[in-house]
Amino acid sequence: MRGFGELEAEIMDRLWAWGRPATVREVVDDLQRQRPVAYTTVTTVADILHTKGWLRRDKAGRAWLYEPTCTREAYTAQLMHQALETTPDRAGALLHFVEGISGDEASALRAALEQVAPLERGATLEQGAPLERGAALGQAKGRDGK
Image (cartoon, rainbow, N blue to C red; front, side, top):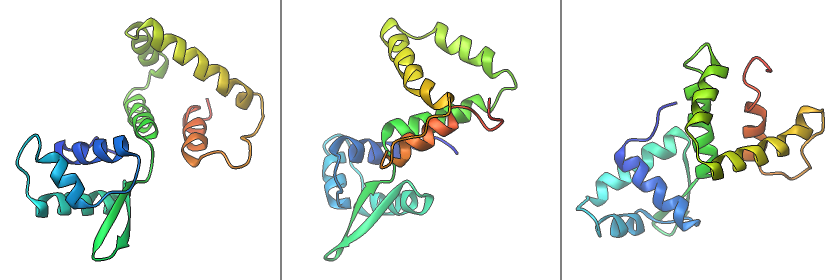
């Protein structure tokens, strides 16, 4: 998995921020407040994001409505997992990471670890939990189960 290109990131940022499906026209109009961009270019990039699995789309009249297939947080977690996979010393990488976070981020990390602790003891996710949460918690252990 690679991070998004510049225009891909701009499109995803808007869709995540809006929290609702949107047409290419809406995205183009918003992008053009900052810089010129062609409708066809945004259409092509949205189609690429759909093909890659980052966007789902539904027909609304003659236009497509696009929406992200995961949350911004789930995407960020996937990038973090990918970064950890680049080193044989995950513990060392995590230590360097934690040394650079703020106090608020450390508190958030502690709270997240507390939420995962019951899962480590064999508890299961409550039925109906969002898929991203379950997937992210399952990946937190790593591929080797540690």
